Amino acid sequence: MSKLQQTREEIRRELESPPALRVFGSGWWSGALGIILGVTAFFGVLCVWFPGVFSIAELKIMHQTGWYHPVLIAMIASAFFCSLLSLILRPSKALGMTGMVFTLLALTLAGNGMKPVVSGSSPYYFGLDFFILRLLLTGLVFIPFESFFPHRNKQGIFRFEWREDLFYYFISSMMVQLLTWLSLMPANTLFAITTWTAFRSWVAGLPFFVQLFAIMVLTDFVQYWVHRMFHRIPFLWRFHAVHHSAQCMDWMAGARMHFFEILALRGTTVIPMIVLGFDQSAVNAYLLIVYLYATFVHSNLGFRFGFLEKFLVTPRFHHWHHGVEKEAIDVNFSVHFPLYDMLFGTHHMPEKDRWPDGYGIHGNPVPKGYWQQFLHPFRRKKK
Image 1 (cartoon, rainbow, N blue to C red):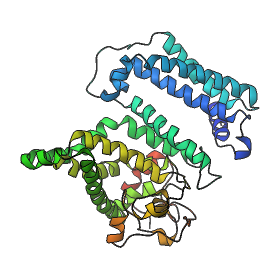
Image 2 (cartoon, one colour; image 1 turned 90 degrees about the vertical axis):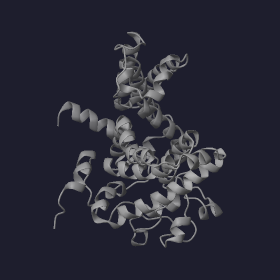
Image 3 (cartoon, rainbow, N blue to C red; image 1 turned 30 degrees about the vertical axis):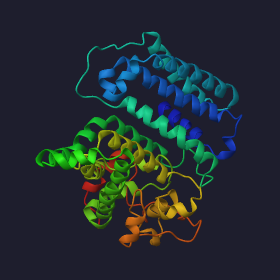
Image 4 (cartoon, one colour; image 1 turned 135 degrees about the horizontal axis):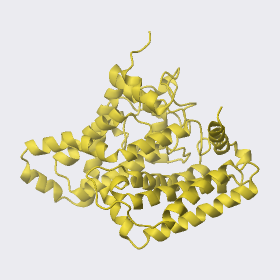
């Protein structure tokens, strides 16, 4: 094993340390935070240097605001302090040194000027800033809740297969432009060939919350049947099996989804929103809700939601969809409202407080690693 591989393994072992070695004062929390802040600051400076390459159009304007640069500098300072604290407190220096390396890289780039290196913009870009914002938004919201109110106490933040799921986050964020363009193509085509001007004007004129609720009901209906097809049709199941291969459920698990399933699911789900003419503000609000809601239902939260479980999809409801038990097969396809599962005979919520014993697919037929999983649906099934 090379020196680089040894270093990587040591960092991985440190991040995946058992709870007894992750207590406050051990240097683990400061080391992990130093890495997160250091990497985030480094990526943030890259987005400033190459906005035409690494920034999506909606976030590029942040670089010209008065708070973006001071936040980056504060992040670099915080990463340096956390990494230094970990180096002092922890016997193993892997976390502290890794955080320090990224911190110094970010500081070096920032010190050479916080302005674009390449002027002008390109029609094509990678969503590096979207990845940062997406990870910070969901991480800051869900990590504290999962830490203090977990369903599985011993799972930990850096649990089994966390690197795979983080890479799924990275790929889907970096390819956000391509995914968005391809996903909207069917809906935009249908919009162009239909002439429902008066009806669309009436829909767009409905109160905001009426539109938002209607979008949730319609998209949930479409997604229920598309989701069910991915379970019932063998060829489609080979794509969806990648999502179900996750053996741990938390805020990162929902990101594990095959590239072509994302296109199919998003491409069909957005059709009611676009074709029926809902106002863009309601569409944008729904997109934010569905993103956070998908993270929520996969999360490792042990909250009791009582009577709300009859009306809204909760983590326990969706965890049963991912359960490895026989009773969990082909149930609970809804995304927002369990009503569709009740109507079409796929609803399953056992007695109060009972959760699945495990997650994944019996026999674990899906290979490990992003690229192996990407190719999995196209390979001939071994007899």
